[in-house]
Length: 295
Image (cartoon, rainbow, N blue to C red; front, top):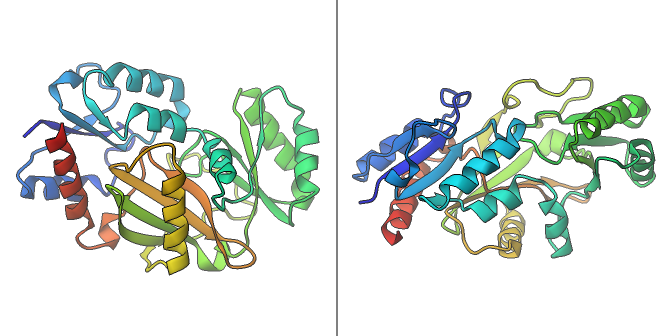
C-alpha cells in the first residue's frame, strides 16, 4: 500500500477533531497515515503516493504561499483534492459560476479592489433586505465576515473598504433570516456518495465584530437532510467543472420561501464532523484507501 499523508497546519493540528478518528479508522483498515503540517520545509512529498488535504485552515491568510506549495508538490504526489480544485475553490467567485450553471446559491455580489466601495454597497442595498453580510471572497471559518443592518451602512462600508484596501475582493450577500431558527445544513460526500449531514447553528450575530480566531465557534448537531436539500447538493456537485471528488461538503441555508440555497461549497479543507455521524470516519478511511489503490 502506498504511503499516505494527512495534511494539517500548525495552528490547526490540536483543533481538528476529525484527525484522531480518521487516523484510528485508517489504522484499523491496515494503513498508518502520516499527519504533516503543510508548510513543513523538511518534508519530501514524493515519499507519499497520496496526500490528503485536511485542516490547512490558515491558508486564507497565506493564500499565495499556500497555492505555491500546492503547485510545488502536485508533480511529486497525488494530491486530493487536486490542485485545479483547490485553486477554483479557495476563492468564493466560484459561487457566480454555480449560479450561472443554474444552481440556487445565496445571491452574491462581488466588489473588486479598485472599484468604488460606496457605489457598490449602495447599489447592492437597493435590492437587498434589512440585513446583509460583508465578507472577503477568500476566507474560511467566518473570519472577517460580519452581519449588518441597513442602519449600519457606514460600518459596513468601512469594513468593505478595509478589505478592498488590503487588495481583497469583497462578497456582499443578503442575510437570510431563516438561518437564525433553522441553522445551516452541511451535507458531506465521499467519492461522490452522500455520507452524512449536520446542522450548524447561526454563526453571525448582530453587533459582534468578525472573529479573530482561526475559525468562529460552531454549534454542531446531527441532521437528517430533506429530499430537497439532498437534491440541491447533488445539483451543486454535478455543476462543478470536475468529476467526483474524494470529499466534498455542501453548506445550505434556506431563503425566505424555505427553499435551500448554497452558501458554500467546501472542497479544500472542510471539517467533516465524524463525531456526529457514527461510521463516517470509517467510510472516509475506506474512500481514501480505495483512492490510494488506484494510484
